[in-house]
Image (cartoon, rainbow, N blue to C red):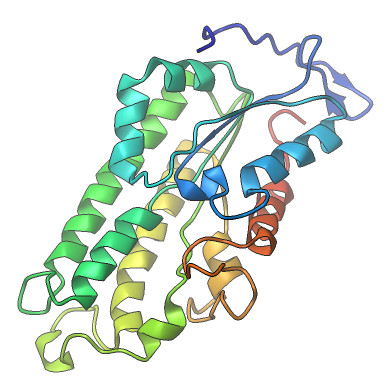
Length: 262
């Protein structure tokens, strides 16, 4: 564990770039198995770190705190209780995070197994959305308590759906039981909740001033119905990105630029 506050950002603009003391950017990444690059040769975090080194012309110190299997509750707890997480955020000039796919995945499986409860088999989806919203806002608060968008590149990404094609072919709950806004085949029901999760992320970003890489649109298109497997973005396990998929995410982060550092 390093000590918070070691980083000194000079903030001088030289040749279009920013100097960071005598070194380069310090980048802290948070998230789940997407951040670890699970099953890929190189994940989006490593690729974005390489982009930072190229674009700033200086070596990057990377602290990848991604954890396989993390949900939004796990990440919030780590930020609240783990000194290493707190210190590595406090010392960074670049912070990224992804979270929520495991929240969605677990509730989706309960829904498809007809164990979600409620007349419409959606109680677990509603509960997941509520807890995710609370956790996401808590995560943003923990990060922004330690770093400011005025002097730090703070970026998140929204959540993609790797199961669009399979869910469009299924209808786990009879439509006559679905009296609310989420109704139809499994894709239509689940997309309603995923859209709500991504709306939480977008609202948080708007209120707090950080930027979000639009990975859901990148993977699933503007309607949310495109199949990322067909694009070559999803690997053999049907969930995690391929190297091509990770490159697309890294490119999305890079395309947001590096304000406020330059």
